[in-house]
Image (tube, rainbow over all chains, first blue to last red):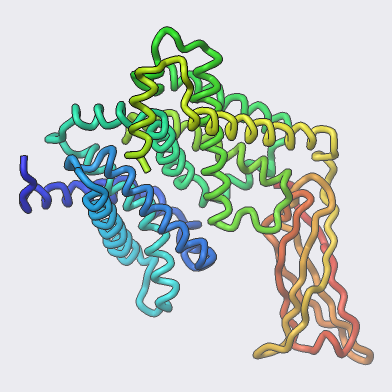
Length: 274
Length: 140
């Protein structure tokens, strides 16, 4: 079915819906406002670039239309980022987080940071709020993508959930409160839940679920790899927010385990959302 | 990126016994990370992660700024346990005048880590004796 401008407009409206729904928790999180100006500019740029790459991938798996080329995926990614920026800017102004006596650097920083979750929401909103979508094509695409696709979806899920928790002070506070025993328990629990989700929701996908897959092979190929992805994503997000500056390896490890918990849940359930 | 993996995925379907290189790489990275994380936490168990905070403060830089002088410092926690609400007090004492005191509270100084901060004085700290010390902390 050809995509007319009218259908595209409907998709765009859904994208705005997704941006608001997925972006609202962070739009109303105090730490996000101050991070908007305190986050290193280089790290912010890198974060936006990383988000764009992620959006291109997400567009491939679950854009509102079946895309046929990298160009279309890239166009969708920029559209989603645009929706994210506009949504964040409007809502931050309405919430009085942005006022016009602020410096431009401050305003742009706040909007740019908020546009990360909002634009991912915009991309997902097209799927979550849409009904006319070609589900078969999407499933086929996920099947075709194989293991690399699984890893990508896990990365996207982990990033989205980790990004929603990481700005809050609670993440570092919990890490500081925990004894090594708590950290070990949480790490084991994260992997256990990740493994259970992989099995019970059939996240491991059609190719890899067959009877041949033993506990150990699923554990190695999905649980361990997934938890690895979750830990790396956590480290990246913590570093972006400057939580790791001047902090010892031991305390960073605790933070990784704390943020790795939501990240691994995000990785495990990514397939439900994306 | 994903289009490249498409190829690998199709091959997996046909040759079930062969594990693609990407699976090996991802699993090995995962394994290394898990071992690393658990290793560091395990190491903490036996290396005083529960020793209460010991905070030291070093002056990094003193500079004249608009309206006074700015002292940048680095607070270091030499023990394993994290400290919250660490108060740093700085005093400039010059002969023949009352000492001038400034204070700041650092939200957190994690174990074996450092945090930077600054204090302002109206008097030039280099004109007299400048001393910085932590006055207290709370458990996080």
